[in-house]
Image (cartoon, rainbow, N blue to C red; front, side, top):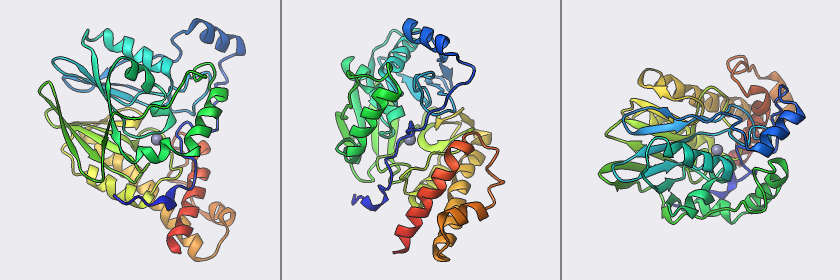
Length: 333
Ligand SMILES: [Zn+2]
């Protein structure tokens, strides 16, 4: 696959530099939770099918207070081992996930499939690597891992997310990489995992994972539910195409990268909400670029009513619109 580098406009990370401050947490309470490694926020396993589970991160930006627990991770219990999907946003969160899995099964964790290399999905990888898990990702993750963005993001996170991210937190390269657009049928102890490249969309290296026997789709950050998506340096044009492909999966459940699971009844509407938002951003910002309007003018003139009540609108929308404006400029060249 030939990657289109022009879309790398921004240092994309879901746990981007902004921080959500939880006004109800006093400094001493936050310190308490830090020193005691208290279970704040709560992490619980949600079972979505016979063998598949996930934990749901908060609809927030990464912060010391929430320990960067802002994304989901899934796991599937096979007859002899556990397959984890995404590694959460810090080693301590990953350790908590490992402990949580132990309350459900004594089986070892054999694999981790990484939907994409954004900080809030990968900073826990080292925990699984140290347990001997086989890590699978898309080869386009190399673009991120070898970038200044990854190095600077980790450096900033050591400050912003201390002590959850520290000098011992490291970036982990996958053991096995999918290439191009070729899907992989992974069979683990008799359970089939259909792993499909979906990028460049939210990131160049997006993977989605489908369990045909249980009709569960782990959609990574192609799907955000209950909050506005993070667009960053995404290729929104191809993201829309990929979402249209997701609509063709026969699903009982979709586990998104952020937010609660979608049932078969709500899956279509949930995917369409993300798709319609991306389409709208592109239409509005595309028209502004065509008409030589400045971003500020265009942003003010755009009617955001359909999305302004979606959580994270205040944090994300202007940045999403700006990134889309830049993208539409590039696409118009
Ligand atoms: Zn992401």
